[in-house]
Amino acid sequence: MNQCLDKQRKAMSAVVSTLCFLCAMMVLLPLALILFHLVRMGAGALNWNFLTQLPGGGGMANAIVGSFVLVMLAVLLGVPVGVLGGIYLSEFGSPRLNWAVRFAADILNGTPSIVWGILVYALMVVPMKGSSAYAGGVALGLIMIPLIIRTTEGMLALVPDSYREAALALGIPKWKSVLHIVLRTAGKGIITGILLACARVAGETAPLLFTAAGNQYWSHSLTEPIASLPQQIYTYARQPYVDWHRQAWAGALVLVFFVLAFNAGVRFLTRGRNPPLAK
Amino acid sequence: MHTAAVKQSMGLAPPSKAGDAAFKWLTWCMAMMIFVLVVLLGWELFRGSALSLKKFGWSFLANSDWDPVNGNFGALPFVFGTFVSSVLGLMLALPLSLGASIYLTEWAPGWVGQPAMALIEMLAAIPSVILGLWGMVVLVPWLRAHPYPLMQKAFGFLPFFGGRINGPCVLSAAVILAIMIVPIITSISREVFRAVPDSHREAAFALGATRWEMIRLAVLKGSKRGIFAAAMLGLGRALGETMAVTMVIGKSTVIASSLFAPGCTLASGLATEFGDASDDLYVSALFELGLVLLLVTIVTNILAHVLVGATGAPKHA
Image 1 (cartoon, rainbow over the protein chains, first blue to last red):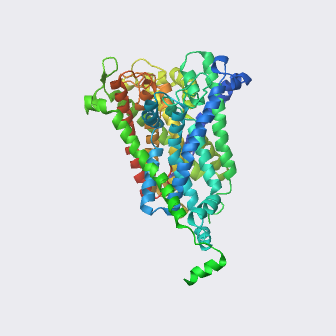
Image 2 (cartoon, each protein chain N blue to C red):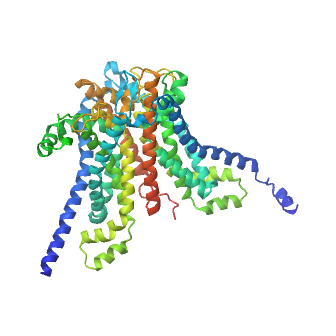
């Protein structure tokens, strides 16, 4: 009787373990399928023309460059604000203020990216009477700010206080000790955070729809609408033409390559050496 | 006097206070940007929707007509679509994520767990427009051809599974959303499970529990809040997801009882209609959709934040 019950319990455990294993497989299945289809459908359409020509000539060169320009603009806005804000929290902040900022940053991180697009539309596109690369860059930059503030604060908190005290004991003004010693010590972690934020915004489409607005040609000024890879993929995907879908897949392959390369690179760089100074 | 003289003799100027003050002020301004952004988001969306707020008031939320031609705008189809697709997505994603994270923390050997988690996080890093493209071209036609007819055959008597089967529909959106939020829920619930001390597990084993009994007793029991918080964060993400949903939900602003009918969500409505909005009232109504979306995600995120904070589990942005 007892043995029978034991068997039942063990069988139950085995069944659940199989189910959980299947769940894990199911979770990974979409990733495998997406990568498979990306390569299968994208690789065929990916050629030299694609990387160097305008959409009219069967390429996405302007979108690739446009994405790069937009991310650069976003970095110009997001990195100074995010890093300096993070410095304030870790070096000058009070627990209550930090809690409030962290809370607000988490709320902002959870804000749908399309809402950022609308904000920038109201703030910049309407007053400037038109979409522009600036507006798109600002939209992406605003999304970066809360991400970078959080990672910077976290990384700076790992720098041991003895470093700061040693600097102060030498009579170095606090701002110099922060910039030259604390920031430099946490540098790798902060840069990791920035790169991850870049990878994140590089794939964003929704905030660009009404701000950067897309462009089938080269844009010659930052005050003009500008193309970007995600938006170009979206534009092509919505059309019913097989050839345009092929273009979309090729664009998706390029975009995924950049985003995943960024992520994998960061993971590789920081692997095994979790901030060197953490205890 | 004396110390000053010593410093003088050593050739050191006292550290300047001005630099510190300026630096502190500058960094303070940047940290305050976070609050400025929160206020700005709320204010600009509120200001943009003033016209619609004045014209429709609270009835905006209850009105199921979205008729740009006649200038009659109600948000109900969008709210309904957002709610249905996100909650369904969560219902699909939650069991899978929990199973996966239990497997990864409790059963998988270390050499499986780490790479598997890295892959799951890779899925999270795939841009939403690419998931949308894949969903549109690969997933939806497959769903339309195989599982949907089966589901209709089995449950066709229910209104949710009745009617004509469309490829792009609310159910397809829910499936794509599930795929998108699985990584978040999995990684957070994995952290929650890992926070359970090993001594609890050992205690359960010492009582003669099988592994599954141990998991139920020692791991799941204390993790309820953490799991709930993970689900809320996933839900928050699903509610605001734009591109992938826009690409697989079809486009219809009519509320249908069937999950096989096309629909719309707050975010997808914004993405598809903002560009064509011609008159001021139309734009204003779209701003109000944005405002509703912002408020809904804020509430969800606050709920998750409070819960995660209370359990002491690691916070994920």
